[in-house]
Image 1: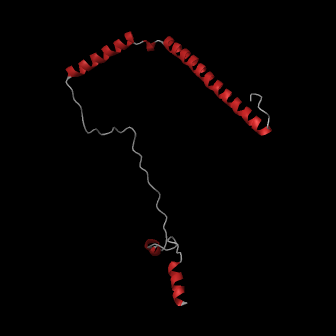
Image 2: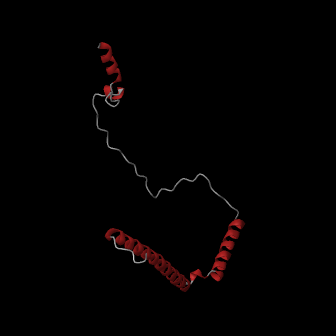
Image 3: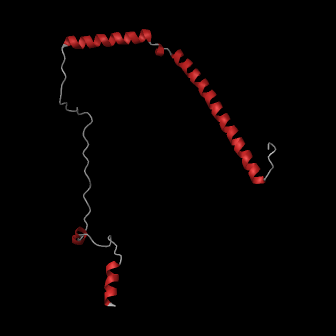
Length: 131
């Protein structure tokens, strides 16, 4: 009998979370923490830079000239600055969207109608006139 009691006590379930951890056993009281102090840096302070890129004045001038040349190229060859072009794009996109939406909704409506018809026939046991 004594042996069966020792077996049952060894096999019994013990909750692992019911034990106190050593930290909480030594804890006598909790003290509230001091308010957290947040220091806000002034937004006007410049960010310190670690590297400075220096170029020859001739290179800087060449970069500026090429940028101006590219901007002139865009103005002469790129028509997107004209607002009328964007109106045409909007019109074409609206027409395409309306057509595709109509096709998709039409197909969905046909599928739903066929499904509802099958449900009605199955539920009310209506003989199928097509058969």
